Length: 124
Image 1 (tube, rainbow, N blue to C red):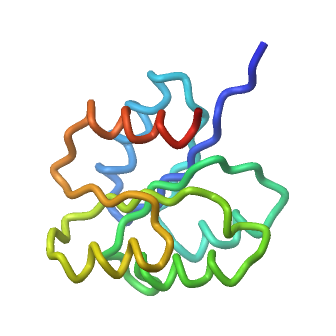
Image 2 (cartoon, one colour):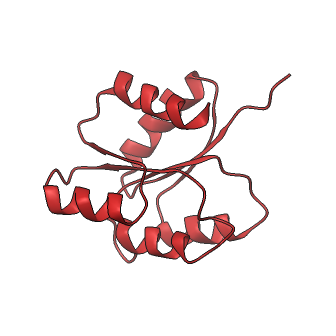
């Protein structure tokens, strides 16, 4: 039997985390949901297997751009697809995230069917 994909969701909103976790678990994914971006980076530094990251931009301490920077600095993490999931809908933020290596950029409120489709695209 095939092992489910592991998705890390990083968002400082507990409500968003809960909703994304439920949605993704209902789709058969294993989900690690963390509100603190520093904890998420520490988790990634451990012996975990993460197949995809959903990442918010606007978070206290370490924002999504700094998080991407830290992922890009690690050869072990650099290949993990990162989808930005954010309330920021300006072109500059989108361009910056994609230039920094994010594979997609989705704005809140999310179209959940579109999100599921984008996730499937990067996990198949």
